[in-house]
Image (cartoon, rainbow, N blue to C red; front, side):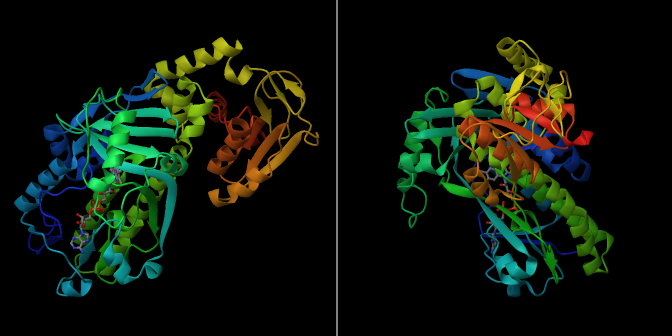
Length: 489
Ligand SMILES: Cc1cc2nc3c(=O)[nH]c(=O)nc-3n(C[C@H](O)[C@H](O)[C@H](O)COP(=O)(O)OP(=O)(O)OC[C@H]3O[C@@H](n4cnc5c(N)ncnc54)[C@H](O)[C@@H]3O)c2cc1C
């Protein structure tokens, strides 16, 4: 803003000190970096000077290590990123007032524009009115805690461990020459079984959370090669996905987490906040005499882009709510494919890393003797030579088999419009036979199909608009036994 409008007075109020930072690192994909760099080279500068770059994501489980190459990403310690941003703001002439809490928006009435970038628990949002802004919050069921470690991971690594209490998984990546981020997730029951809820919520994070640090250190000791887990106000929480209808009211414009969040597994919160800031500054500079027009333009430009990221984050967050099931039912290699295909298809994975996909295909071939979609399967008592059907149940790949849609051991289930409706559909699943899942959304169909086949040992068919790429992804990753394709209707 200050660079666009050098004559204007830009003041930053930050309650923390300049050197404070919450959590550990922040990740950016190479693609994100290119977009932000076009507007401002500050991030690239920070990452190349003080960050770490890698190309491969690893998944570790059950003694195996699988790799997914072609995923250029960088990470940086939050403290380092903040200090580069502060240097740039200072060079541009921004008046930065650290250790300055703003109790009320009323205190800023002399300003033409107030940018409320006060984070997920935004008090500005409360003052303006969450209902008036159309603010919505959905809380995830999984528990997470944000640690660091002195063990240097070699790029983004997902480490899975199971013990008598249940399943835990860590998202780990290097952020400097001395530290890696180490975020741990577990489902609520596992967390309770392990007694990790026994901290005093009335006390600040610290000694009352040491039990969790020690527990995690011991559980992941082999992966951390004896290195310690590091805390920074680390406390268990549930991720909250936020979204907002109106991005401004009067002369108060919101940005970043105050408006929207996306599960940290897609590493996009900071990117979205920065892209909001770039867009807002540009719109204001281009409409300097018409603030309402500027803010409308800002909202119109950014809202659809943020919605896209949040749409991609939803299946990823859901994966992290169910990872124990996938761990317990899929082989490590298929588990790896299942994880990486939570929001992209097998074709995209193959483009980045052909070896990973051929390894999963070879494993299937070794087990079944035929490629996935050509592998015979029995559906509601009828033997099919392939796993791709037309919407009315006819085999599409080979053979003349036809699914009897009225067969007694075929249950057709309508997927719900959202995840809240899943419990009632789970209750309606039969104890044996084949289910055909239709309707709902791609995510609710998959979750229902997975509950049927991975949770209850049923055979499942997904009925959806699909192509061979999507069908191969669903079958090879273990999400369904067969696909009935609506696109042939
Ligand atoms: C575990 C975890 C991992 C994550 N990893 C990634 C990742 O890898 N990549 C990524 O892009 N994103 C990641 N994110 C998301 C990212 O941290 C946030 O989206 C990002 O910090 C949002 O920036 P913001 O400026 O909107 O809010 P914040 O970073 O929360 O900043 C808000 C600031 O406002 C200040 N403030 C609040 N109220 C007042 C007041 N009244 N007066 C003065 N100051 C005030 C606060 O002190 C704070 O500094 C992760 C989030 C979590 C929880």
